[in-house]
Amino acid sequence: MSILIFIDHAEGQIKKTSFETMSYGTALAKQTGTDAEGIFLGTTNEDLTALGKYGLKKIHHISQVALNQLDADQFIDVISSAAEKSGTSVIVLSHNNTGRAIAPGLSARLKAGLVTGAIGLPDTSNGFIVKKNVFSGKAFCTLSIKTTVKIISINPNAYPIQTGEGTAEIISENTSLKPARVSTKKISRASGEIPLTEAEIVVSGGRGMKGPENWGPIEELARLLHAATACSRPVADAGWRPHHEHVGQTGIAIAPNLYIAIGISGAIQHLAGVNRSKIIVVINKDPEAPFFKSADYGIVGDAFEVLPKLIQALKKFKGVA
Amino acid sequence: MKILVCISKTADTTAKIAFADNNRKFVTDGVQWIINPYDEWYALVRAIELKEMDSGIVIHMATVGGPDCDAVIRKALALGGDEAIRVNAEPVDGFFVASQIAAIAKTGDYDLILTGKETIDYNGASVGGMLAGLLDLPFISLAAKLDLEGAKATLLRETEGGEETVEVNLPMVVCCQKGMAEQRIPNMKGIMGARSKPLKVMDPVATDSLTEIISFELPPAKKGVKMISADHVEELIRLLHEEAKII
Image (cartoon, rainbow over all chains, first blue to last red; front, side):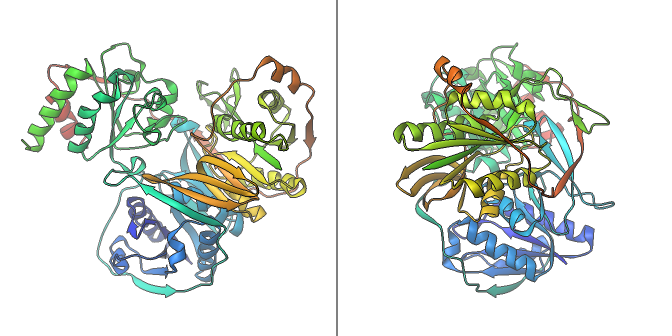
C-alpha cells in the first residue's frame, strides 16, 4: 500500500504544481497510515533526494530521455506498471495540462475511479469521498470513488505547499518503453513569464484598457506583485493580447489567491473562469459593472488614473523606488 | 475518412444552479440545454471544417443520455455532420460514458475521435482520455489546432506557459479547445437538413461506473464588496495586506 505521486516537470525543472501534489499526497499518506512515493519520468539536473522534504520516502526515477516528451501512452504505461508493482492505493496528479493528458487514461487502464480537479483531501472516515468544483466554479460536488485503486488530480493552487525535513531514496529504474506514437516537433515556451494556471496573483485587463498599447501599467503592476497577466475574451479576440492569456469559460479557468480585474465588466462567461479565485479586486469606471457583485474589493474609477496611483502605492509598500 | 465527435448536453452558462432531494440532484426546471460549448465550437466545428476541405470525410456524432438530448443533437446536426448516435442511458460518470462511446467506436472504424476539453457542468475532462485508454489509441489533450495530411495529424497542444507542435498517425483521440475552429451558427438550410439526418438510438452496453455523486453544495455567499475610494488606493494595499493577508 502506498500513495504514488506523479512529479511533473518541464525540461527537468519541477513544476510548482508538483510541490502541491507532493504535499497533498504526503498528507493523504499520513491520513491513511501509508507511505508517500513519487514517480519522476525523464531526465533532470535537480537533486531528487531533496524532495524528501515534502514527505516522500521513495522516488521511482525512470530516466529514459524519451520521457522528456509527453506521450500519454508511454506515461500511462510506465506509471501504471509502477503503481501495480508498489501496490499503490491512490495515484495523485495535478489537474494541469499533463495531468489532463494522463489521468483519464490511467483510470481506464487500471479501472481505477478518477476524480479530476479535487480541491481538498478526501474524507476517508467512511469510504473515500472527494470534493471538487462543478458548474465552472458555481458549485461543489462530493463524489465517492468506489474502486480499490483510486486516482485524484488536484486543481492547481488549491492545496498549500508544506515542507519539513527528510531525504527521499531514489530508485532508478529502466523500463522498456512502448514505441512512441506522438512525436514532438516543436516546443515553444514563453520564457520568464509565470504560467497563468500556476500564478498566485493574476492581473487582468479588459476592453476598458482601450488598446494593446495601454498594457504597460498592467504589466508593471504584475511585475511588482510577481503576478501573471491575463485578459478577457474580447481582448484576446481583438488580438490585443495572446490567446493563452484569455481567462473565462472558453479560455482557461484559474484559481489564484488574488485576481485583479481592470476594465472588465464581469460577464457570466468571464466569471466562470475566475470565480474560484480566493480574493477578487475589481477596478472599473462603471459603478454598475456586474463584476462588483462578485468582488471582495472594488474601486470605481478610470483605469488610467487608478493604475498609476496603485503602482505608486504598491512601490511605497514594497519599499522600492 | 470517418470522424466521430462526442457531444454532451449541458445546462446553459447562465442557468441558475440549484439542488434538490437533499442536495443530491441538480434542479433542471427552467434550465436551457445547450451543446457543451467545447464539444460544439471546437470539436464539432473543426470536424465540419475538415469535411469542407475533404468531401470524402464522414462525420458521426455520439452522445449518452435520455430522449431529452434529442433537441440538442438535432442542433448539432444542423451545424453539420452526417449521422448521430444516442446511447439511451443516463450518464453515471466519465468512465460509464467513455465505455458506451468506446463500444460505438469499436464497430465504427473511425480515424479520428474528437471531444471538447471538458463539459461546463461536471468539468470532468476525462471522457476523451478514457476513450483513448479503452481503445488503445494515441491521445492529445488541450489541442488548439488540428490539421490532417493523409493519415497523419499535426496538432498544436498547450503546455503550462507554452505550446508544442506534435505529429500523430491516425487513428487517434483529440480533446479540443479554443483556437481549434471558428465558432459558427446553424443556417436555415442546415436546420431543415438536420430533420432528415439519421439519429440512431442504441441500448447501452453493460458497464460499471467507478465513481458516484454523493451530494452537491453551493459556495458560501460572498460577504459583499468593500468599496475603496479611487483617491485612496493605498487603502486597497493595506486591506490586501492586513485583512486578506495575500500580499
